[in-house]
Image (cartoon, rainbow, N blue to C red; front, side):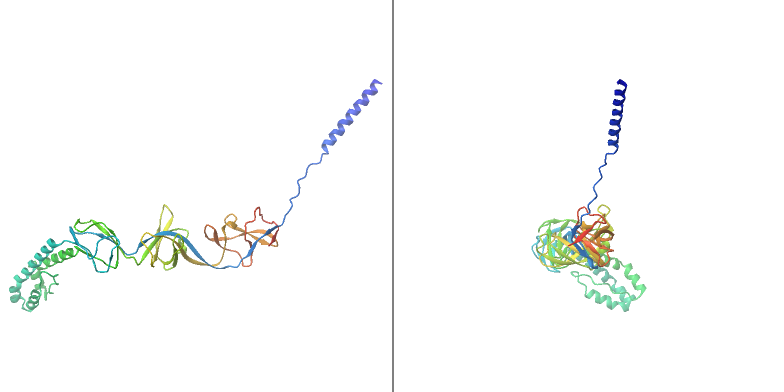
Length: 367
């Protein structure tokens, strides 16, 4: 009986172990639930390629195109001006901006003219004997000579011998020395080269003016230029002569300008190129800050989309047979919010809004 009981217990233990092992081996593995393909509603656009103008935004300050910095080349006292020499004063073309006392230097010029008159007078007897044909023209020159007026050009010699004779008497060199002095005498008076406004005055009447001293600034308020820095990536889009729309920061006033110049040098620090916009109009002031929309070239067969629709900066989602697919595109121009692209066939259906979690092959329903 003891052996029988032990055998039965051993068999039961083996049976229980076998069933337990089998139950572990036959445990069903949890299966991943199948991905449920949900169809999402999307908003779309149908592409129609057109000609799109490229507009490059830029900002800058106005500066007068015609600007004159007044400097003195002579020394003396500031004696007179046709108007009150103060900032904001208007002058007409040809009016006296600033006069420096030249009485002492003018006296030396008259002395030099008198010396020339004496030199010519001294050669008249020799001219009568040696060059009788030229005597009359030199006599007329002396008759019209006035030491208080600018000297007239010397009579033209009739022969080489006469030229050597005149030159040997130191007349030619004295004449050109007087012309140099007369040129310098004219620098004591500074006149307005154009109608404009004095924007800066650094001297007052009675002030001592020295050579090289800055006296002020004078501008033409009718024409201004605005220098704008444009990224080198956009320079190829710009052309001289293109019209530019300008407006103030608050967008209350608008102006129209023209691209007058484009610098050929790229700033190595900022990688920008300076372009100059010429603008005319009322209510413009030196130093005014404006925003510009530079009309660049027109891109043919292109389309404009929102920048947020780009995938990896080179693809967009399109809808084909109610499924999303990726399409490679060519970027032409990028702004903060929009991009101009090419490579999308006409009639292609693209997403209008970003679809969260979108992937290629995802089924969608077009709204």
